[in-house]
Amino acid sequence: MEKIKLKNLGYSDYFENSYRSIDHQDLLPARIIAEHKGLYVLRNETHEFSAKITGKMMFSASSREDYPAVGDWVLTKKSDENSYVIKEILPRKTMLQRKSSGGFDSQIIASNIDVAFIVQSPDRDFSLNRIERYLTLVKTGNIKPIIVLNKIDLISDVDLEMKISEIKTRFDNIDVYMTSAVSRKGIDDLKNSIKEGLTYCFIGSSGVGKSSIINTFLGEDLIKTGAISSHANRGKHVTSSREIYILERGGLLIDTPGMREIGILDAETGIKDVFSEIDEMSKGCRFSDCSHINEPGCAVLESVRSEDLDQDLYDNYIKLLKENEYHTVSKVEKREKDKKFGKFIKTSKKIMKKHNQ
Image 1 (spheres, rainbow, N blue to C red):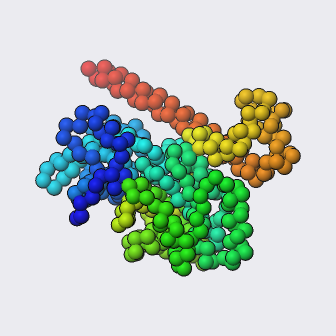
Image 2: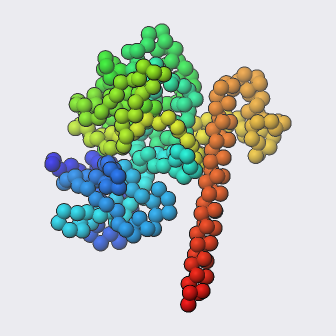
Image 3: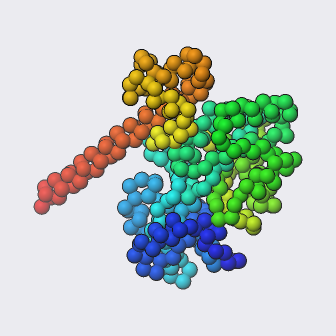
């Protein structure tokens, strides 16, 4: 395998400083480029190899965030001639995560991402509100967002101009690219935006063409893609895991499974960033803890009434605020219950041990 510099894998001073601050004892840094049922695939300067986490790391983990994720920089050690173990995870610079399906814990999508391409397709579930939801996830993780409107060959020029106008009016401070993996229109422009040593993640619903774009970048069909189902125009979940692909000219790409549910959690900062216009307006509210729903003297509600603030934008803002508050409070309550249950088990064991003596 061709030798590669760590900086071309995304290793920066941030990770080097963390590495130097740890008593590493001959542990070497490597990046997780894929995960398969508890077995991690890693890459360092010289080769690609697989590794498992130690039993100690598994035992001490209190949540899914304590386990390695694709994109992590970890410290590894060779346990025998053919086996490696992951001893430690270096602090994450950025993290893309969402609320886990059916629960109140967070699910890490990928870590140490510099730019997230939010891919939408005009022929499917195109929605400005959905874009805002993705933007909230991305900005909560301190990641730069870029919007990609893909499959533009499927709509007329008139409809395309309308969609572009809608996006740029709502998100005037975010870069937007128009692409088609079929006609290759806009593909080179998007590819040329990718810089060496930076990590880019593609996120979006199934069937919007994330994998197809990456395949055109790589020049070969490394990622399986599926046709859109004729029933309800739904995309198939073809990508089932996350993996890092390295471009020959530099840059690292992460494909992700399509997301039907984009639950947000601990996203107050991201919401404020995405809805910065409303956040600025709120400074004029009579009450500092205004919820912007029914309070007198609310500057945000006044802007909605005077039509200075778009009603749809306001509605989505309130929806995301309520959802984030509900999930965040529920997460805290769950942790308190787990903590009390843990104390109960511990006390019960002591009583049983004393009784059996």
